[in-house]
Image 1 (cartoon, rainbow, N blue to C red):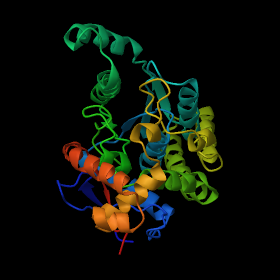
Image 2 (cartoon, one colour):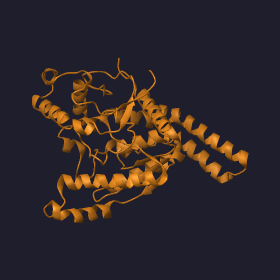
Image 3 (cartoon, rainbow, N blue to C red):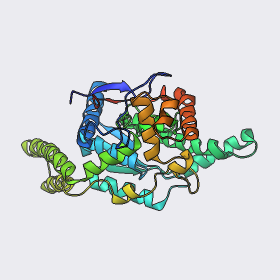
Image 4 (cartoon, rainbow, N blue to C red):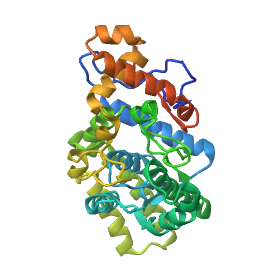
Length: 340
């Protein structure tokens, strides 16, 4: 596979931009999950170097996208240069908070907790008169997402950390995101991956091959840091042992909690919210349809000929067209030659 390049994750209106394919009945995967993962890590590292950032900050929701993005950040930069932020809101589940905390421990990164309940409620009170008496529905959901981005950008500015976006290609094409909320960030390492590919890549990274591949890098980083400290006689032996232990753990402990793979994906911006219910389609079907349309260039008639329901095709393609303006405002993402 060739070297990774950078591209805007958003195509121009009407343009067909290659996507990373999921395993569907339409096409087989051309590039393996391990190569997709490595390309994303390399692109993230390259972008940060060119932008002059040494440290990254990423919001940790306890879901798959933010979990995999955080792992990529650690593999690209080293654990000492990655900063996680938990931003629990009024509808955040206890298991999501727990999963985010476990992820941070597994990765050996620092994790800050900045609850958004109070700022969100303050916005809701201030906006209520202008919103007909109450901030509710989509406006309330998106305000929560924007509260999170205000907090993340404040930490980015305060510490000089680059904010990493955690969006994926499926969400981008469906406009399932909040402008100036979860679309914020300087770079989107998952921006070229369908949602189903995000899971496949994460499963590879959590598996034996992924653990072995990146344990070597972790050990090398730790060894270099320990060598520098020994040369200056400034590193406490206890801290050195802790660092070595953390590196060893990264080679044996799957970083992403298993529950993240099995629970339904949710933005947790409303009671009982689940992505697939909100979208009205499961991700496997959505990704197959999007791949056939965008990667293979099939129009509505051809998609129906492939066996997709006509009403579903019309609904998805209409939403893709209607949300093109959002994709134009998304951060750059990896662009690697995944397909021949």
